[in-house]
Length: 463
Ligand SMILES: [Zn+2]
Image (cartoon, rainbow, N blue to C red; front, top):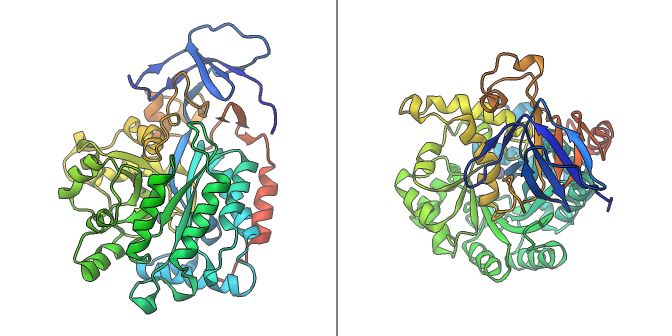
């Protein structure tokens, strides 16, 4: 592990804290020590051994937290046959592509590692400091160390990772919708989940790596698996539960097979304790919102993939008004084609104006940034992330607000979301280490990461 010098960030032009008082501070300093925020104030003295960094001209906020990602899908962008595809043929096309790669001996932990490293590097350059990944594709039903490879890649890149042990356990031949050739037994999933928890899970509030249990969804996973995951999570502090819900295909599946809504289905199987965060929720009924809020489950909003797949716009304003925990993410690159979370916030700010109710119900830049930082961290059960406060993790992202493309911006927070030629961050810090400086990675050679991912990718052999 590299030694990380303590840092004094000086004269931050605009600091968005997302603390309990929603403070926004101008011209302040932030002291970072031992990977955490140590002090916030004006004109702080430079301590012995500290490095001072001039932050004039920068807007600084907590590092973005991507609460839903599938990093292996970095290799599945812009597949022409799936450019215009609804969810069922899209899932089938992805399955065919990945199975073909596996049959050719190319779907390996090394490939997943190279693609994950590219996705995490892209995310980091865009200001993301924590990702929640869900790897659910195990071709042949074989537990290869794809998740272990993703964890190692996160350690190389320097981001924090919630590694979700994804699954597919309900094959088409048994009445589910998952491809038979990529399903695993519940026993094997649980064995590997416990192994991952034992080897990699860290319950510490400032943990770099956590393990979550992440069934892919009610249409591809058996009810008993949801129940077993809930039991394991209850016994292991800091282990979260994550799944896709209300993504159209699971809505009709639960209605047809169980006579329930997807929410009723997961609650029946032990979910709803507050350890969960649920991705998409696009066609979730408004009437269930009080139950989500009472249960304390998180909801991850994913504007770009929801539009990419033709789902439409989720009722985010209604979730916020109902007191739900709401986070933000990009999902995997097969249904987003990128990991650009700030870019997706701009899309969200504009697209949600099409929801009914008029301008006063549109999502503001501050609301979207709050969802993307503190909101996502809260979904993940990480109160020390997504906030700039003494004792919180020193995970910060900064953008230039004095560049030519932001001339004339009256409010730098709105300007960050709605203006600018590029979403690339100027500086990104994770656990007190400057990982991006001047818009470039400090630890890794970005070109090399890209070249290694391209070399690992069986491009052209698609759906
Ligand atoms: Zn997803």
